[in-house]
Image 1: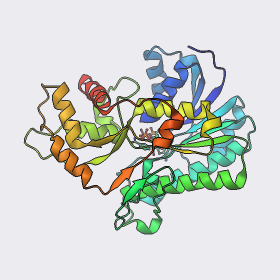
Image 2: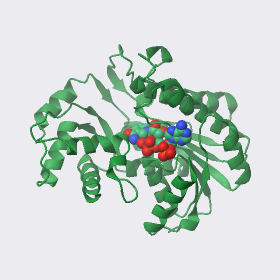
Image 3: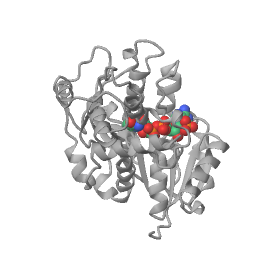
Image 4: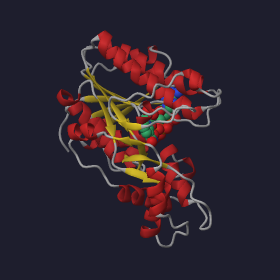
Length: 345
Ligand code: NAP
């Protein structure tokens, strides 16, 4: 373990991605203050950290129950002047919401706005990383048929008018990440903060949970995508899914590199793409590595056809060059996820 003395504030520390960030930060010798939504969640995370053999003296938590007010962020930064790095990962990833504007878009956008404004008032903060998403680059609105090549420069163009109704959480999530990303750009351009800012844009995030899974009914959205294939009966249709993916351990690594190498990353949007994925490919990988699991076989030919008919491509090679590390391949990501799900009883 190195002997970093810097303190990092991680919002949404209980999240799938954030738990890996917290774990990797502690392993690297950073002190971490995580925001959680309740004392129970904070204590639970603390015990997972201890059970994993990490030094829990390097982790503390604060309770922030919602993201829409600025005051809780002001309080954290005033009480903890030792914070020099902020990683803002908290954002609703809730596809069961009943009101996309109130439950998804407002917390994402106001949370981003308020934490940036609050950080600006605290001169000890030198580096800021925000978790965006590739959905901020792709137009997923109902009539939008994305075409061409998506890069770090692309924007979804999504607006609230694209919502088909209050429960349109898919488009709502796209709007939330787009508008939060635009707020970051506005803040950078107009408010000239004393800290560097980097946005990380993960694609579908696969891979194991950072800590032991005690209840597999509570997996987060993207881990649940793998779990769904695992639950298919052998004769069932494999539901189509196409996209690009990144392993969660690489997402955490990218957040850390983003602030450690801020001279290269400042002001950038970094898209994370470790390759293409389909449910057909996921099923093939599970069959190859877990012969006792009885699910549909998965077809490489179907997978290729689905990917070809998508009409869009991604080029995040510039981000990969800047980050400068090799990404975990799909097979390892899926095998490690499935192994963990099968181990959790
Ligand atoms: P997650 O496991 O659902 O984590 C989300 C975190 O944000 C949790 O800590 C959650 O707290 C917190 N949160 C959500 N809504 C909140 C609210 N209204 N007020 C306060 N805290 C709130 O999801 P994740 O996959 O790790 O996502 C983390 C970040 O990565 C998000 O910004 C997401 O948009 C982005 N991302 C994820 C993926 C993916 O495939 N997973 C891909 C691209 C980008 P609780 O634990 O208390 O619910």
